[in-house]
Image (cartoon, rainbow, N blue to C red; front, side, top):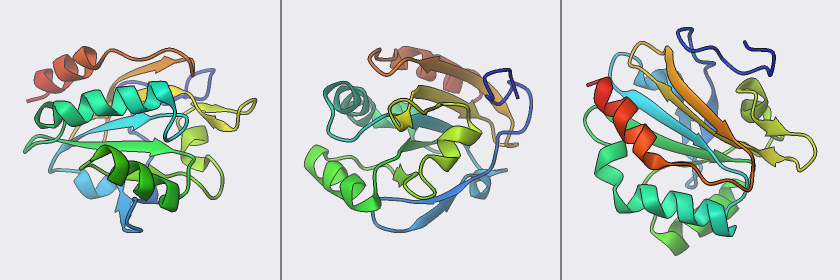
Length: 157
């Protein structure tokens, strides 16, 4: 872990299990040996910047979710909010609820913001072996560049 409590590139990523928008549990380690994983933390469903970022991923989903990679997005919203958000925006990828204990997974990844009670915009690329290969963290108001994710995932193929 870094001084900010974030996982270190080259070390195993913290495992987690959260439910998706349908209430189905998803465990990070279930992808080991099978796929790289793009983990995208976002502050709040239905907010302008979060919706914009996730719509960019939705509109080019095959770059982020395919035979080589799996996309999972995580916020502190409940599974019910996640489901309404996914249905409204047509998201065909897991929106995971880090609802209770509130923000526990975001804390383990060093991206929980105690001031707002939400996750910062943290992105983590984890390889098939479960090792963190790349990460970037932005403050809540600042959108990320998905081109970076494309390049990192392409380099893992």
